[in-house]
Image 1 (cartoon, rainbow, N blue to C red):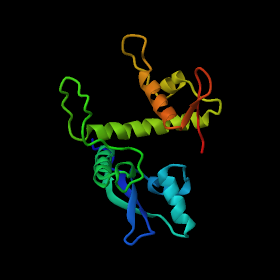
Image 2: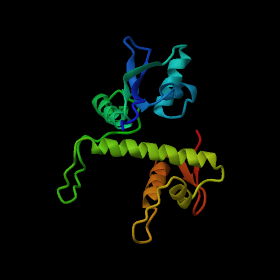
Image 3: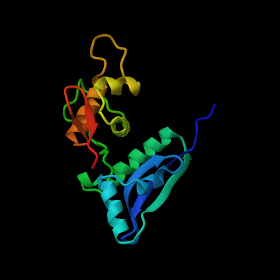
Length: 193
């Protein structure tokens, strides 16, 4: 049975320069590449889109690779983000995922790091954070760690009582980024900007 090959990798390009320069790399299906223009968020990418629109210009959407599997799209997206670099690391892109080319200095047991796994993990983390934020926005009273773990199918069935560490970590990262706020001992709400 063949894998679904409906994915593509795209670039959002800034038309204020000639040639238009990429400022965001993403993967998707359907109209995903154009959704950024329809729902402009408060991210660096959203700010760039607003600045382009304020001059009466449009964002150029370029499909770079089409008819690929999701795994192929993830790999190509990670490679392109690494190649162009993010603004946070002196590169061109506004992507919030920062692929790490070099493994951490704190290595455990001389751990072997296969090529591309850090990028995959960071891309996966980005999707997890987006899912948690969407869940929080949809529930105006906020969500608990238990809500997140159970509703998104992220609770571990491993031995012991610490079954929801993954979702605690994601909630903690979102709070550090200022995208989520703890409103009482258990509930967290999205910080809508």
